[in-house]
Image 1 (cartoon, one colour):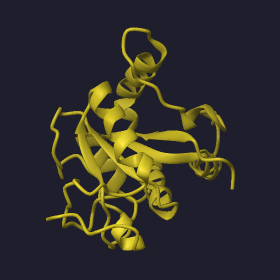
Image 2 (image 1 turned 90 degrees about the vertical axis):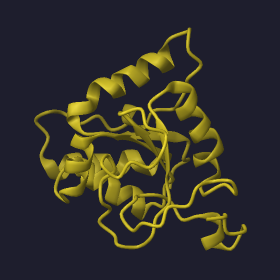
Image 3 (image 1 turned 180 degrees about the vertical axis):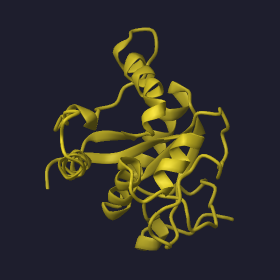
Image 4 (image 1 turned 60 degrees about the vertical axis):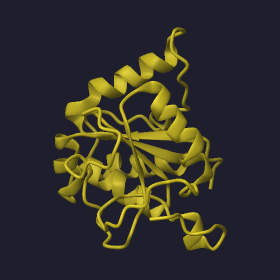
Amino acid sequence: MSYRNKTYVAFASEDIHYYRLMEAWRDGSKISFNFFDAHDLYVARDTSLPETIRRNLRERMKNAKQIVLLGSAAGRAKGSDRKSFLAHEIKVGIEFDLPVVVANLDSKRTVDRAVIPQAPSRRRHYTVSVSFQPVVIMHALDDYAAESGVPVNAVRTNTTDLPTARSDYERGSAQRPPV
C-alpha cells in the first residue's frame, strides 16, 4: 500500500461548495488551514462508468490517513442509501479503518445524528463531530485523526451507525475513555 498522508473529504454532491471553501481556506494566506487532498489523485471524468468511479474512489482512499465527512441532511440521505458514491466512500473508509471527523455544516459541535449517514456495517464505530470552521477542523484532524483513534478525553458515542476508526482501547493500546 502507498504512503498514507492525505485527507479524504467525503460529501454529498449538493455540498460541493463547502468542499471548495475548504480548498480556498487551504490555498489562501489569511487562514491557517492545510490538508493534503486525496481528491487530487485519480481524477474521474463525468463520462466515466460508475464502476470506474468507485474503483478510482477506492484508489484515492488508499492514500488517505483520515476522512473529513461534511455532515448535512443531503449527506445523511445519500450516505445511507447504500448505492451512492458517498455510501461507497463511507463503506471503504470503514473497511480501511480510517478515522472520521464529521464537520457539521449546521455549525453544531456535538454529534448530530440528523447529518451523519448510517454505516453499512452494524458494528460500533467512533467519530468526532465538530463545527465547520477551519481552526476547529484542523484541531480535530491534528488531535483526533492523526492518532487514528479516540483520545483519552474524547466523548464516546454509544451508537452503531457512526462511521469511524477503531479506537485505541479496542486495539489494546490505551485505557477506555470515560463515558
